[in-house]
Image (cartoon, rainbow, N blue to C red; front, top):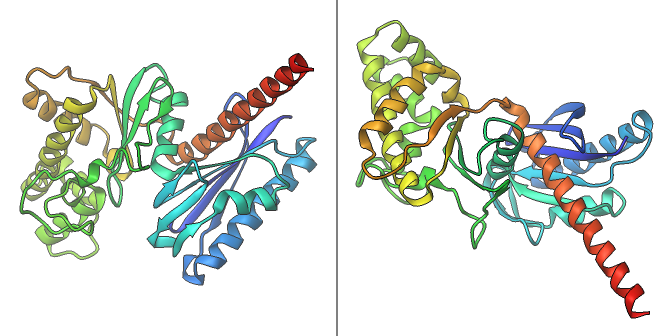
Amino acid sequence: MRHVIALDVGGTGMKAALVGADGTLLHQARRATQRERGGDAVVETILGFAAELRAYGEEHLGEPAVAAGVAVPGVVDEEAGVVVFAANLGWRNLPMRALLTERLGDIPVALGHDVRTGGLGEGRLGAGKDADRFLFMPLGTGIAGAIGIEGRIEPGAHGSAGEIGHVVVRPGGIDCGCGQRGCLERYASASAVTLAWQAATGDEKATAADCAAAVDAGDGRAVKVWQDAVDALADGLVMALTLLDPRTLIIGGGLAEAGETLFTPLRAAVAERVTFQSPPTIVPAVLGDSAGCLGAGLLAWDLLDRVELDHTAATGSSEVTA
């Protein structure tokens, strides 16, 4: 069965799959990233994992993979196939595509940014599959976005489109690791809610999920922490709506697991803030942690389509010339 290799590399774990042309997950596997071993060791783990997936496909699906896609965190030059910088993995100017191509036997390899790749999967196969314009936003340790336009994800001129987590929503506010103060992710990410709830309760083990549960139970402290996060998120989203005018807004990540505890007040807060803007449909992501693998598979299939189209065009033109 014709298939591609898909890898979704995170700071703590890697998810992998063999993906059919229709987006079917034919085989799935997981492995620890083991970043404590250093950047070079992580690279070797990825290459070895990919080789094992190729071998599995040959044995169980009757043929080797025809292409591969890999999603990684950090600053990614997708055209060059280079991870420019990934702090959590200890990489700088890593030629990931070239390394994987060599290990996998010269098949086409696509490289993508983890959030944009997850957005591609969610946009085509998940909650955004019927939307011509969407914004995918996972609310996790940080906040980032993927801008979907007619089935593709816009990377920006320098590969950094969608960094909505670093839009300033509270000028002069909390310091952010990016060098600014008052960034959205310092107020509305799962980690920000966790910190705020820990401060409110004095419990260093409290989590954002605990805060959501306390909101449902009617705890006044939790309601305030939660509403502060929702208000900051709504402020950031209205800014995004004004600039991008998406038809669908897809919210994923850990905070979205709170369900309507998040979505009901968020929809209300956005509605209160829009004036001339057209409010989007605000929906939860549906693919969960498989979005990255599915997106990486789509990257691989898209690349393969381009390679085969270019080959056909080149062959045809040479025949005409002859």
